[in-house]
Image (tube, rainbow, N blue to C red; front, side, top):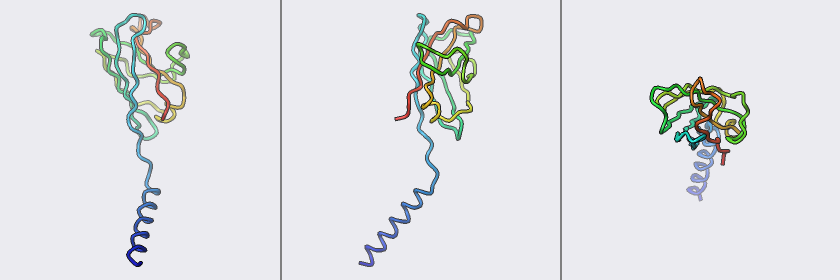
Length: 137
């Protein structure tokens, strides 16, 4: 009886401690970036929670060497992006980009956003890849 009571109190203490600890950061979210306009460029964007911000790491296969490609997060879908970017990302260079943006991962997942890349600064109206940020599960 005493042993059962001690065990129950120990378990209650562990549950209370777990409830009081801060929530764990969300695991990384992978966005599949698929080619647009016959570019042949595809890859992924890895979104990782960083406090109230989100770290965005993009890796693209088939990106032209030495060409700076503008990269953004937009509201909308790949088929229907809001023209004005919601968040700018570091320009893609040689297929790589890394940026921390001022929005939480949860808000990105809830907000109906997509990530897209442009052919170049001179040909910004030509999209070369895009991917929708999936909602939280």
